[in-house]
Amino acid sequence: MADKTVHIPDSPARRAIWCGIFGALAYAAYALKAMGGFDLRLSDSHSLLDFASLALLVLAGEQLAALAVIYIVRHRAGPAGEIKMLNGFLQVMAILILIGAFVYSLGRLQAIGTLAAGFAGMLLGWSLQAPVSGIAAWVLVTLKRPFRIGDRVFFSSLGLVGDVKHVGLMYTVMDQVGGSIGSEEAIGRDILIPNAMLFNQVAINYTPKAQAAFILDEVVIRITYDSDWDATEKVMLEAAYAVTASIIKETGDKPYIRSDMWDYGILMRLRYMTMAKDRPRITHEIVRHIFKAVQRNPKVDWAIPFVYSFRKSTDGMMRGHLPASDTQMVEIPASAVIEEGLEFLNTPEYEAESVKLAQNIQERGLLQPIIVTPLPDGRYRVIAGHKRFLACRKLGWKIVPVVVQQEPVGELASPITVV
Image 1 (cartoon, rainbow, N blue to C red):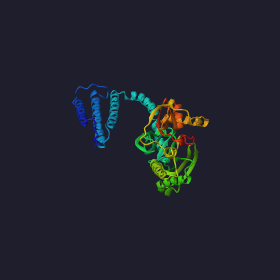
Image 2: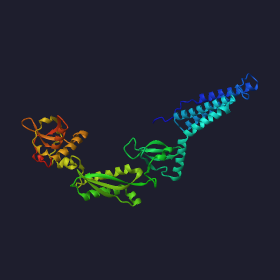
Image 3: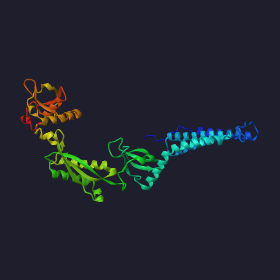
Image 4: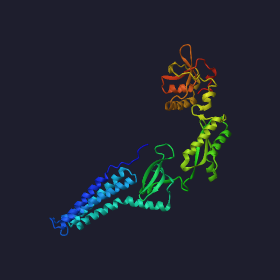
């Protein structure tokens, strides 16, 4: 088990010692002035010992405050960086107080203060533009509530999606959704958005009505033209009803099917109401139900680009004559394959398809084997995978991976079954 103890490098003992030293020196300076010791006048009303005692008290107070910061942060199990930030702020404040005390001891505070106040006012006005805008945005968000704590919000111009965790005076904190993963799930990484930016951001609230608001979603599958339409709809709707039964009961919106024609089959779109914050899990459950049901149902078949059918790519296309399981892939020169059986592919339709197939092979590799049979003269003839062979040759492959079938299968040479 990992050690979660917070190790804080800033030593409380060192802070306590310095606090005591500065306090003792301040008391000594005050006592020396009371005894009428040597005291250099800085102005008519203040002396060097006055300034020294005040400065030492400020330093002692800074060490005491730093000591309190260490114990408070340690008690909250905070990080060491938090101590460093807070103590750095205390050091800057102590320096500013010392400078002000020295100017006051010189009797020049009024003259210098007027100049400093003018400059500080100008600087303050410029620097407070964003904070004032942030406070105004916080007031508007709190009163108008375009989003609330717990809502899932999308800032389109920032490209950020997150669940709102806190709406503060200056910042809105969101638990990022996505980012490190390709899914609409919260990943536990906080994002701080300055409230001043909310004035010019388009915010899309996924959950404007309730913590578990519902949105329309869809799962799309592609089936072959010879699949049973009614069986496909039944499989998809049963999956949606099984997974989203509670949502259907609460919303009254039932799943339905929409479809589109596609080059390699029919796109079946299952549309249903889902929970905005639980969308990935619900999609996964529906896809799992559909996949298992299609595996059990011979009337429904997946349509796969360049292969057309999952089932035909394994048993239908090869008609039960697939290479034996122990057959190995070998590489042969592309020039050793004869043109016989390839002439019918020299048509504009096949040419356009071969361009797409070549691009697919270039991106994903040769996913299915080319099957050839050996000829007496040492060359080969393609008996399955004619289009894939031509696509490989179009890509400039000099060597082509193939499976050598010793016995030619005549039926496979038919252009109807060539893929």
